[in-house]
Image (cartoon, rainbow, N blue to C red; front, side):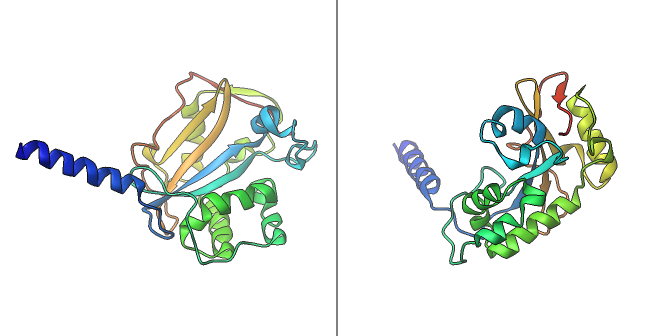
Length: 212
């Protein structure tokens, strides 16, 4: 009976922990998510008539988000005393995030959990992107290519030798490259990802559509 009672107490505590509200600034590390813009445009952006997808924009990877993470799981939709960014401040992030709308959405869902001000979070996005620059081989990609996900990882590791195999993961959606996700410390230094983030695409090859 004691063992059963102890188990029930443990389950109750775990359920309570699962219901706990996320607290801004309380997290372990970041995931920098870099989305392959041409694939997003073909799947979603063209139908939305997004300016990110206009011909001649020359957009390859964009920062989908900088996500606070726990060692298992992640916080989102935190309450913060920091004021929301203005439309102008969000629109100014379009050069790295594709659109001001995405910047605003990412602030709402993830940036508020960083414990930073909106300006501080947007600057952290820029700083994180600078830590892991897009490899030159993918810059202005002139034609569609099909490559193994490991080759994409190799290119990022060659461009940023501080990255490790466990610190970067490549995701796919159907046949297409979706994202490259890079794990960073709270100080934006490369680190290994926790196991729940290390979910590499299982396809032998992924399609990288040419840059528009």
